[in-house]
Structures are given as C-alpha cells and as structure tokens.
Length: 231
Image 1 (cartoon, helix red, strand yellow):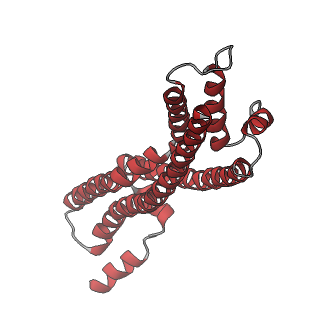
Image 2: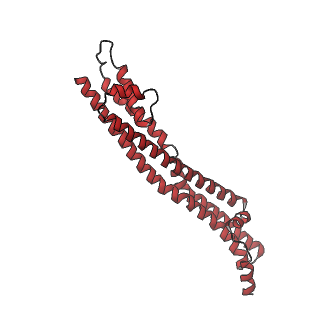
Image 3: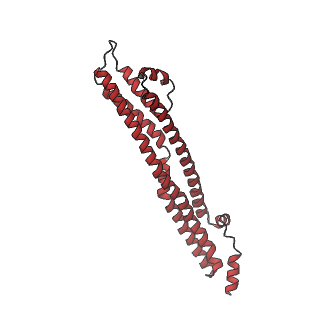
C-alpha cells in the first residue's frame, strides 16, 4: 500500500508551472499579483540606480564648474536655458530670484536673501520628489507582499483540506499537491518582499545623501550671495 502511495506521489508533476495551473483561481490571482509586483520592483530598482548615478554625475560636474572660480553670472548665462541635472536647476532657480530681487538702481529689494533661500528650497523639494518616485511602491511591496502570499497559502491549504474531505483520503498523493501549491504563494511573497525591502533601504540612504549635497550647496550658495550683498 505504501509503495502504491509513493509511486502515485512520484508521478505528480511538482514543477512551478504545473503547481500554478493546478492552483485555484484565487491562488492563481495571488501568484500573478506577486510576480507582477516583483518584476515591477526590479524595474524600479534598476531605474533608480541609473537615475541616482546620473544625478551624482551631473552634481559632480556642476560643482566643479561652480567652484572653478569663474564668475557666477557667466556660469548662469551658460546653463540657464538648458540646465542639466538637479544641482544646475537649483542654481538657476536661485540666480533667477537674485535677478528678480534687483532694483532698477542696482540695489536689492529688502528680504532678497530669504526669498532666494526659499526659492532654492522649493527647487530642492521638487527635484527630490522626482528622484523619490517609485520608492513608495518598493516600501509597499516590502510590507504587504508576505501577507498577500500568506493569504494565498491559507486559501490553498483550505482548498487542500476540502479535497481531502471530498476524497476521504489522507494519503500523500492527495495531500501533497494542494500543500505544495499553497506554499508557492508564500515563497513568491517572500521573493517579492525581500529585494524590495533591501533595495528600498539602500536607495533611501542614497537619496538622503543626494539631498544632503543639494542642501549643502544651497546653503553655501546663499552664503556667497549674502556676502555679495554686504559688499
């Protein structure tokens, strides 16, 4: 009897594709959702690594020009029409406000430094929002994917018990397929969640570093403009 049961179990296809096709419609939907979430997460991860690398490259290039000693007016005239990268756009925003704050007699409107700082702060927030897009999705996947997978597992096990009750048999050939199908959902949930959490933390740290560089530049630029006002 045991030999027949083992033989029947061995004849069952336990490949992932076969487990998917044998699963109930609810478990199939759960698996599809998790697979799509996993692919979407990886696409965001790769895109963010590219975006952050480009942002750092543009920032390095601009800071080299900014600290080269050339007049800021010349640098502004060179990049104002087509600023490349977030740092250049922040610089252009500050210089534009500087120009608006000048009176016709060459003096400055009262409160000009505060307005320039606020203008650059708004520009920084706008640039960070662009870089932050997609990270919320990674955080969401990392938080809920295991629970979605667990739901699929619970539903699959429920269906497996129903099949046991219908067949009135608890042999391995009846129990194993349903349990295996159910556990695949949990595995997919973890497969989607673990990379999402790991890279969300990594990308968030990178974004904080980039934000700190923008804030530091804006502060130094404001100091330079304030000195010019005092002179």
